[in-house]
Image (cartoon, rainbow, N blue to C red; front, top):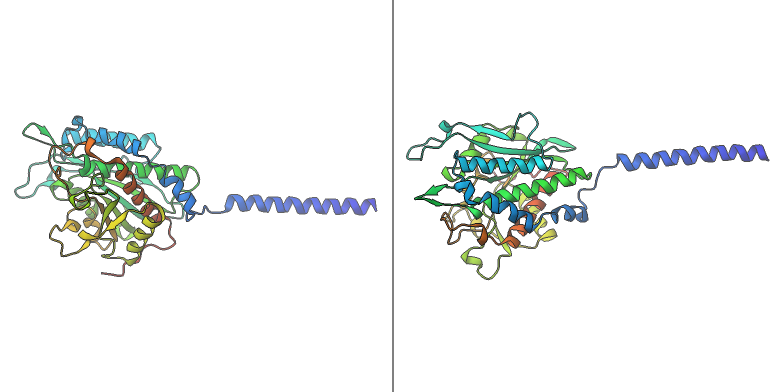
Length: 348
């Protein structure tokens, strides 16, 4: 009896050991569930009004001299943006040697345009865990119009608001990656230059892409998300959505879902009409992706009394609205970076 008991004990111990090893293997080999709304909300809600405000007061300060393309103030703003990425462990893209994509002054020259200096797009990168060669681009322009007649055009809404949104979205994604919930696809955070003078920076990237455009599954473009316009005097709980359904039904649906799941803004499609005389669809950097049949969406708060005036200052930004719209953009990018299939282009 004792011998049998000992043998059974040995067999039992071996069985328990194997079960334990299998359980351990299962725990460490399982993939993170990036579709869990609780997980998404954790990182989405790490985006704060206070951090956005702190960055915006710097990016749109007088020290940056209106961030005109190629001038000293814009270059100072660029260094500040890069320092943020370095401080948060967010790398420049694989295959490059710095956070800069240089653009020569000659590229900006067009008839009747001001002469501009050498400038740079700025890029940061989070590599995907499962489909690293598929790229989601998140874009915003960090230039503005500089100084005129001794007055500084700070461009707090246009587009310091989009600039700081990118910075904080990237930080939230890096936090997720550090904690085991990195995106399945790679994300390129692209701060483009020269937008105010003709969408130059995004056009340059589209003509000299770091990653093949065929591998870019979508562009989420953020240009002016810190104020309200005259159509929404009573509430800032809205954002204009432009272009989401122009190329892809999938992109339209996921924008709607990200909003209903996490922020519940009023999605206003007033300027989504291709016949709208403002032609906003053609006036921001997403267009240089969309024209290559890359599904693109433009988040926008509309114009206001301070648009392109020296009075577009940081104290006029509505930081609660800026935070909610930034969170919506984060939710859209999260879905694009983690969904099983890339958005289908079904509306060419």
